[in-house]
Amino acid sequence: MKKYAMLLYPDFSLQEVTTLTSVLTVWFGEKIDYIASENKEYTSEEGLRVKPTRTVDEAKITDYDCVILPGTINPLPPLFDEKLIDFLRKGKGSNVVFASISSSPILLAKAGILDGKKFTSGFFVQMADTFDFVEKENFVHKGVVEDGNVITGIGMFFREFAEAVLKRFGYDFGKELMRAKPDDFTEEELTFYWSDEEYKEFLEELKEYTTSL
Image (cartoon, rainbow, N blue to C red; front, side, top):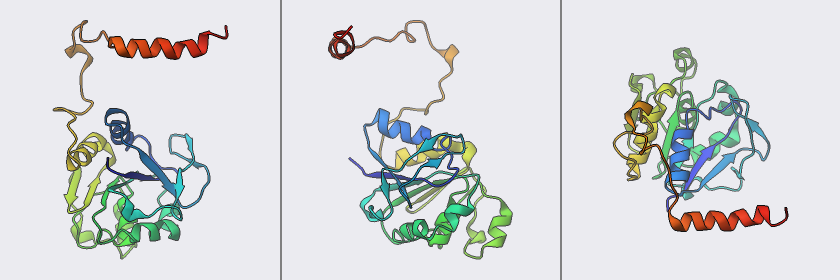
């Protein structure tokens, strides 16, 4: 089993990373630690309130095979969160794979993770002009860019970003990830059955809810 972490910060985007996180956890049974600088509630840009499972003080970044950074419509709070940036900085030069989408590569740039690496991002160009730690000459105008242990993507290419990360770790997710069209399936293919053993387990679990009725 690989070890995965996802960072939380104000207004993080679930939509950009849940294709990746759901495939890792539901399809392949992986566990993800959700890490933030403080043990408090964070609200996603979709309005979902989430609490971390660990703080940066409780976690060691080099213990993870992959650290996922969602985008955010409000990048300044994490950018100036020195505890969070320092946590990332401790992964510089390691074998940790950083999977960063949308605006979040700006955080990797500040932490020095992007030094000398090609990358893409969904942050506004003026941000790169504002901060001298962004190596603009290494920006690549592509949906997903891989350079060494860094995988970056633009938010609209969340499936391709997920595919790149999954391929990096050798998962077999089929020819195309979550792109099936409803009209391409027969009635039989859209009818689902448990195995006999799974149905038996369901009936046993059902007893817990019905015996008290």
